[in-house]
Image (cartoon, rainbow, N blue to C red; front, side, top):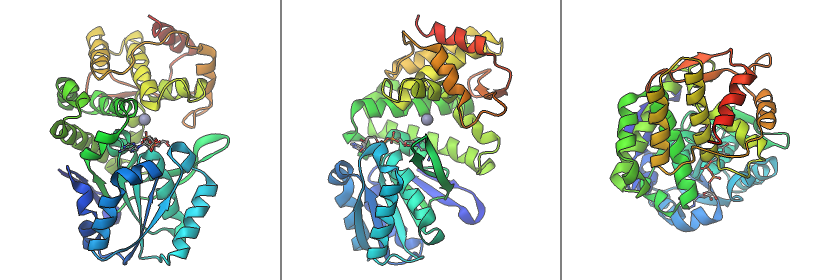
Length: 360
Ligand SMILES: NC(=O)c1ccc[n+]([C@@H]2O[C@H](COP(=O)([O-])OP(=O)(O)OC[C@H]3O[C@@H](n4cnc5c(N)ncnc54)[C@H](O)[C@@H]3O)[C@@H](O)[C@H]2O)c1
Ligand SMILES: [Zn+2]
């Protein structure tokens, strides 16, 4: 499946296909970029999937430099970015060259930041290898490194020239990482597309079994939905906020527990449950709509309850949210499956009530 992201001069295709990595060289060559390329990745991912990419690039005539970066979030620092800039300079990359990111969202965010800043911006290609990166992080051009005071604080918008998502790379992903990415898929269905939501619900077991055909279809569907949002709001002014469904409370749960208790996707799953119940509490939706969301989350093995949530800590984290304006955080809520509404007047008491309900 090929999804075009239409952004004028910054348009690019997302290819979601089993075996897509083997076409990296030919597809990059077709873009008419220069012959030098740098492949940024983490050691474990390189061992599992690096050879396929390097061989494909070399067969197409590219001179490839491989740059190993630390695994996970540890890659997103200024020190690592500087090491990458140095490696690019040593390898003679110029303004026609290409940086490729092979890995999860962490590698993608770092490599995108390096590509955005090296010589004021060079070609960038995403080769995402986690569910989260394939349906979310690799699309839309947000790049970032972390600041000691907050995640993703330093960054730039820099769209890739190409995204190649190979669902077979997901077969090596640890189970907890795999499940976590499914939360973003559920999110896309709830706020953007009822038919897609139904397909996800009906495919829950096939997804958990990592059935390649189901993965390709569902991941492709998510990419299409996110692409449509990006096309209408590239720089995150209003519509793109819809992608924060489940994240206002989800992020706060993560931050309030030091990013240790839950993975991002687990926190988003709880965030979706809490925000669905918030919509019910505010009389914006009915009980069946809430129940359908909880049911699909349970079906893909994501958490829908949590005891001992520290409501004070969660509310404090919400006040520090980058998206808060004048101390108020806007909520994206879902009146029906497939629709959303921005709500600005949620009170701390409402948030406390839905947080308390998570313990049940
Ligand atoms: N730019 C955006 O729009 C955007 C959106 C959402 C999240 N993000 C960022 O993405 C990051 C999270 O991404 P993530 O969830 O992919 O985590 P991650 O990149 O940290 O990867 C998770 C773990 O899986 C391993 N891994 C990756 N692919 C693998 C594979 N195929 N087989 C085996 N192991 C593999 C990684 O080495 C790592 O240990 C965060 O830094 C977040 O800020 C960015
Ligand atoms: Zn998310």
